[in-house]
Length: 212
View 1 (spheres, rainbow, N blue to C red):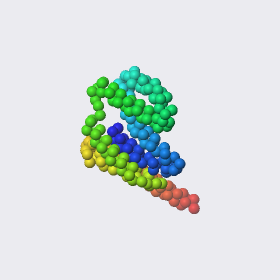
View 2 (cartoon, rainbow, N blue to C red):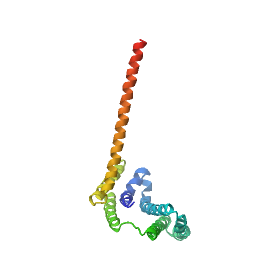
View 3 (spheres, rainbow, N blue to C red):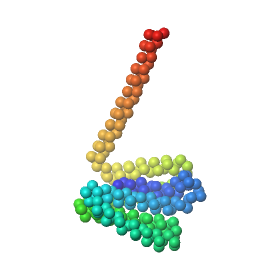
View 4 (tube, rainbow, N blue to C red):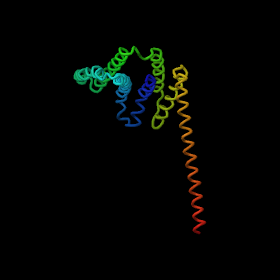
């Protein structure tokens, strides 16, 4: 999940280019709001993971207790900030509530199993995210090049995690085994397709010989 920090940072840094490419220059002013909502989505992912763990532990009541207070909090925040700051106020409320929810979810999991996200991994992920987010912001692109930029920076993020040793040997072995299975499956499909073509051609020639 922490790897998504880098993904969120890349998208948040490139929101101006994304908005201009997808929606047009008339909506560029919404890029700042979109960047905050991308970060908010990362907090939502953390909360959902924590709630899923609680549900799997057969403690559904904790999921309700962990999320129910956010509804009135969000309502009050919107009533206070939207009249003053409009869409920006709404975005800030949503981001704040999501961040509080993510913290509450992580705290709830820690209270049950004394397990929390590794601090070292979190700090290294944050460092990579800041670097890549800054790179996405400083690298202006337009048109289809925006998606090329996202792809390149995404590959750089994977290499960055590889270089700092965040991928364990077991994880690397699992990915390698999956890739090998996919490769073998594709080769088998190609072989089956080629064999079918040869079989159809042979059958067609045999019919022509029988019925010239």
